[in-house]
Structure formats: C-alpha cells, structure tokens
Length: 468
Image 1: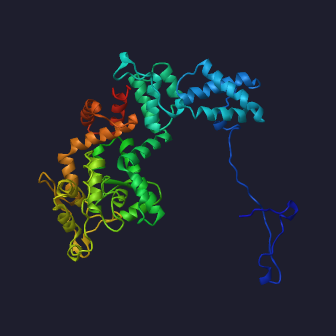
Image 2: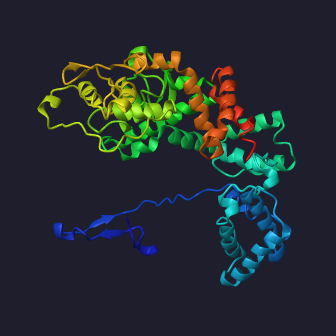
Image 3: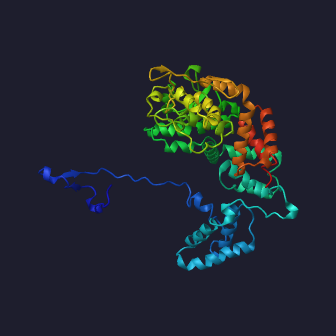
C-alpha cells in the first residue's frame, strides 16, 4: 500500500527505482487516470445525522435546540417521555463540555454518549414492588413496547412503536398483529433469528471446532440453522419441521457437502430433497454434528446430551466425581467398535444410571461423521446406529430417532420449543412459578398445529409476556 504519493506534477510519470540494479533503466509507469470511489449520499446531511440533529427553527439558539435534541434522543433511548428536570441535568453537562469543543454537534455527542451509559438505556427498568404490589404487575404500554422490540429486534423501539404505546393503542389486537408483522419483516428481525437460534442450539460450540479447515464451509454450517429457522418462521411452518422436513435450506457450498445437486450461488434457499439424501430438519445439520464430535469422529455422548438439552429440554444430571474414562491403551478396548466401547463403559456401576439415559440418543447419530457427512461404514465395518432407550423403545438410526420423536415425543418437543422461546422473549430463565403459563402456551401452540409464526404471536399476547 502506498504511504507517500508524488507531487501533482509527477502524477503522470512515476519512476520505480526499486529494481534498478537488475536493469539498465528503472521501470517507468504511465498512469492513464485515477478513479476515487467514496460514499454517495442522495441527501446531505445523511439520515444518520438528521435522526439526531433534526431540522429546527431554533438551530441558531444552542440552548433551545440542545433541549430539543436531548428531549428527542432521551425519549428514544430511554423508551419513555422525559421530564424537564432530566433534560436540565444533561444540559448542565452540555454547558460544561461546550467550551472544550469547536462545534455544537461535537459537544452534544459527548452528552449523548453519557446518556447511553445510564441504567435507563442499558437495562429494562420496572417500578419497585411494595407490599401492596406483590406478584405480577401488568407492563405499561411503553414497557410493553420495549419488551416487544427487544424480543424481535434486539433493539429499542422505533418512533412508530413508541407513538402507538403513548396513544394507548399498541395492545389493540389488530394494531398489535400489524406491528408484529412489521417488526418481523424489518431487516432488524435477523437479530432475533440469529440470537435465538445461537442460544437455543448452542451454536457457539462451533467456534471452538478446529477440524473444519475451510472458512466457507464453516460459515455455511453456522448460517444453515438460522436460515432454516427463518424459512419456518417466515412461512409459518410447523416447528416439527425442525425434527424432519422434506426440504433443506442450503447454499452451494453446503449443498456440495451434503451431495445435493443443482444448487448454485452463496445465498441460502429452500430446496426439495430426496429421502436418500439423509437430510431434513435440524438434527442432520453439519453444524450440530460437527460441534458434537471429538474432531476425529462422532461423539455419541456429546450428541446425546445435546439432544436432551436442546431439543427435549430434559438435560441429564452432571456426571458423578471420579468417573473412570475409557482406557484407550487397553488393546481389547481398541479392538472394539465405538458402540461396543460405549456399551462396555455403560456397564460400569458408576456410569450406568446416566449413560443408559444418554447414550441411545447419541448412538442414533452414528451414521454421521465428525463433519456431518453421511456414512455406512466405519473402518470397513457396517455402522450400527441402533440403540434401545430406557423404556425399551428401539431407535434404528436417524430415521428411527425422527420417527420416534414425531410419534411419541411431539408434546415434549412442543413444550421445549415454547419454553426456550418464552425464556428468550423475557430475557430471563423460567422458574417453577412460570409452569402454568408454559402449559397454557403449549396447549395453544399445539392447537395451532405447532406453527412457529403463531407461537411468536401467542407469546407476545400471553400474560407472562405482558407482566413483570
């Protein structure tokens, strides 16, 4: 990169003497023209500027205009109307900063930055409870607007939401339904799908996986479950599609990884799949399989724990202390298949109680290797992905696992889905006291054929979402 440019009169005739010792004459470069690209704005100042420093007849009066800027900004970031006393406090700070800056805007930016460090911006505040207000209290309209926008945008409400809340109209059924649709159609809703899916599925585990050497493949793996969630949400499909679907949501790189033909380009799209592709739903996604492996091969224990925690919301207890590990120096153990090693380990008295509950779920994933590629053999031996649950139910590989979930565990998965999304919407872990609300939401969700878009509406309309 050039760090020093020639004078204007030298621009058309530049001499490069860096290789003069190789030639009789130094290289000469003649420049035809220079093109400079810069940001183009249709309007000046740009919208990012006028959103804070709006047009006003009082711009020549720094005291009056400063109050206008602060009143608008504080209302937006604190998500409520502000008092004259609150504006006075920040104007006093502005008066202190103003002599240190050459322009009004620079001094005011320092004051606005201070507002962004206040608890009112950083936290969702609520009135303190007293003896007379014990138990849940209904959110105010402005508090509801904040909770709604943080749920679906991971951000503060915009002016339209705030105005409807101040008018007392936001909770009107038709108005609220239209606002939910608007928020989900906004690009900011991608934060909802990205953040929720990362938390729900534990996708941060993929960051520590080192056996994915290709950046484009890693990025595609990371994006696939989010793109799949977006597809289900946008078209209001059943959440049971997360267990199994007759389509995949892939880009060209991931389609090649899955051996799905006919997909071109880096963007993700819904494509129909043949049953022989051994894909469909989230359970066979490469990200899930790769992050629940040991880097060299599958890891049934990790996959079983992930299945219980993330899909069924039934996490196993932590392992007891001093549990013996599999002795890989034992030649007899080295001769065993992975499933045989797991069975041998499970038969130890200290291990049987937990592993009998976890292992069968993970063994059902055995047809997928450390990168999520489907296989039928391991070390020239047929893959045995059949396992028996504690209730004597046989899981015959991934097909058997999906079939069992969709026939015998639909209620449990639906409730897990409601629990995970409600906890995300509230921004807190759920407690025993929330159980009745989750039961009610789950019953409504099931009556709506488990449609994901409907679940978002049900949660927002619920008592638990509308109260502190």
